[in-house]
Image 1: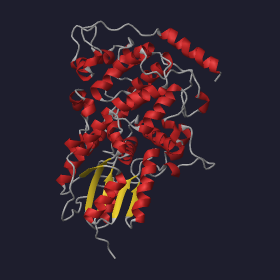
Image 2: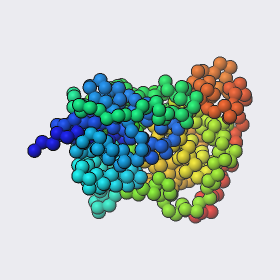
Image 3: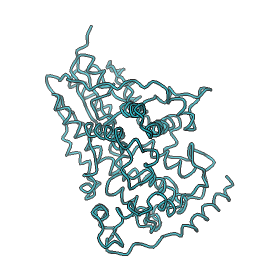
Image 4: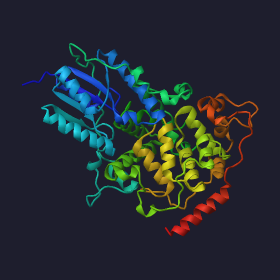
Length: 473
């Protein structure tokens, strides 16, 4: 017998219509489909920038659904309570959602699935946020991968399913359940005045993400391997923002990258490797969830990092006022755009954890508040990789020199001058926008002298090396 009861699609980090297995399954069931987004604890605990950016994505999906005769129902509260209420209101017989892999989401989703099934409601979780389910990629001995390179070799030739198309029509119920108003959630309240500065730099929604993918894979991907290291160049895909909120799927990115590779784009394989690097982060977060909060290499427990985020030099790091131009430019880019160039992220993280001998979790928490492309798995693995305590980590004694990095990858100072106003007779609009984005309480002025270094780079390096030697790694 065909079950024509409504199906609920519980949307989370999958805010798109195409290549959406959960939505596809609900539509295929034949009955009405009710898309819903729930503002639960996982949303309430987001940092300022990611919560604001998520709100933009929710709004974009709501409009996209309306264009095809559907709508997005918004509810606030504990996920299970909200879903049970919707089931009671609509007579829904099934709930579908896309899997997430952080420990809090796994625990929540297991509880929701179990409770709904006990209620007699079909509850189905689907793939979609990663290409390879973490439990489906194993080493030759049956364990999970702890090093990236062999994982890349294991999956690079695996078949990735062809992305699904968007449904032409989503059957609507005769009567829609009540919905909250998105503006009432005030998801951008913590951004304060920074939201207006950041907004022009966001590419929100599925259509914008697909356009961004096409532009990159038919253009800059050719020189990606070399050019991606130069922060002044427009040489990267910048799709991290869209992947974070599921406005585009990794399978769609993989397919476009493979097409570019077949057409002879020299940098395509390296970009595909970056997609698998993201997979590796999720693989590790699933198998070793402690990566989010503890040193992945336990022999680093007890290392002499400072966890004091109020130290003056750490405050200077947060403000982009360390007196080290590459570090400061990168931090200011983040406040204006919500994002930061990948090489710059490495330099910024190395400077904090090594030159300033500060616990990586201080930086991890700050990025979680400030990045619009914040991703729990990538953020944690990236910080631990640079700090030396994580999986597949760079040698712990490798300490990036921000000055030589600037000379190598920004030799004419284009990137630094783009973001740093002090000392320039006519600073550009992006450099000045930083002062509009940051809190008034920082009392910063573009006409002030550029700050002196808060720590001598050579002395900071030697202090870090001495700490490593004393720890006897």
